[in-house]
Amino acid sequence: MIGISKLYCGTVEPSDALRYGRQSSRLPSHLLQFSADKRPVVVWNVTRRCNLKCIHCYAHATDQSASSELTTAEGMALIDDLAAFGVPVLLFSGGEPLVRKDLPELASHAVRKGMRAVISTNGTLIDPETARILKEIGLSYVGISLDGLKPVNDMFRGVKGAFDKAMEGIRNCQRAGIKVGLRFTINKHNVKEIPGIFDLLEEMEIPRVCFYHLVYAGRGTEMVKEDLSHAETRAAVDLIIDRTADLHARGKPKEVLTVDNHADGPYLYLRLLKENPERAAEVLELLKMNEGNNSGRGIGCVSWDGEVYADQFWRHHSFGNVRKRPFSKIWTEPEDPLLLQLKDKKRYVQGRCATCRWLDVCAGNFRVRAEAVTGNVWAPDPACYLTDREISQAV
Image 1 (spheres, helix red, strand yellow):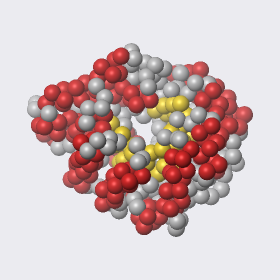
Image 2: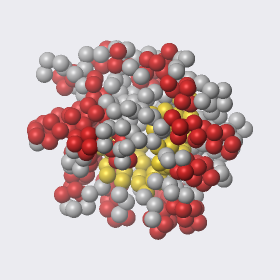
Image 3: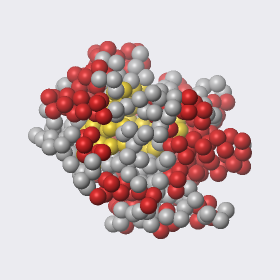
C-alpha cells in the first residue's frame, strides 16, 4: 500500500513510526506498513460463495459454498495460531464473507485474541442488524468494494441494484459507528469514475478509500487487455494525488491509498522532489521503511480450504495447508523454495527490476503479475510505468 495522504499531504512523519519502535504489536493500524518485523497481515478468504458476479474477481467466486471450507472449529484453531504468531490484522474476505453465518463468531474470536479484525465486503448484505452485530464484536474496519457510481458499478458487479444496496450498507455502518471505507479497482472501464468516487467520499463523509491497480488473477486474468496503459496509469495516479491534496487543503482530509503497484511510491517521491524537496526527503525515508511489495513476507493469505498463499491473488501456488501444518510453521519454516525466495526477492528479480534504483522501496513490485504475462515469476512487472530514465542508477 502507498499512503497518498500519509506521504504527499504529510499526515505521517518518519518519527511517528520510530516512536513505537516499528514493531507490529505496538504500532497503531495506520502505521503498520512501516513496521520493521513485518509480521504478516493475513487475508482469510473464509468462503468462495458470493451473492454478486464481479467480472474481475480474483477468487473466481460462485453462488455455491465450497464443501472444503474450513469449519468453525478449524477457523478458531487458525485464529489461535495466527494470534500466537503475532499477526496484527486478520482481514476476512471471500467470496462475500458475510454469507458465512459464523463470521461474527470468528471475527469476535480474533478480537478477543488481540488482533484487529476487518472485513472486505461488497456491502450489499449489511442491514442495520448486521451492522449492529459487527460493531458489538469490535470490528475495526469495513472495506466496501465499489468500482464506480451506479451504472458502472452494477455492470462490474453483474447484479442490478448492487450500488444502491452497497450505499445502504455504508449508511448502516455509519449509523452503527463502524469505520467504513471504499475499495476501487482501476481499469479502462472505470478510470473516469475516480472523480465521482472522491465526490462520494466528501458527500457521505467516508474517511478512507483504497484505489487498487488491476492484478491479473482469477477472472482478472481475462481483463489484462483492460488494464491502463503506462501513460493512463500515471494520469490516474496524478489525479488521485491532486484530489487528495485538494480535500486536505480544504480542511476535509481523507485517508487515501493506492494498492498493488509499488511504482506509485517512487513516482510520488519524484513528483514531490520537484514540488517540495524537504518533504520528498521524509517521504523517501518512509518508503524505505515500507519496503514495497511484501507478498510472502508482510502479507499472506489463507483460502477457504486452508491452502496458504503469498497473497490473495497468487492462488495457483500453495505453500501448504493449515489442516496439515499451522500457518505459523508454514510461514517461518518454509518447505517451498518459492516462499523462501519471496522473503528475499530482491536477490532474484531480473531485467530492469534487478538494476532499478528503487528496488529497496519497491521490492520488484507484483511477481504474480509478471508471471501471468511472461510465465517467469522473476521477470519485470509489466505494470511498472516508470521510465528507464526514472529508474536509472545514473540519475
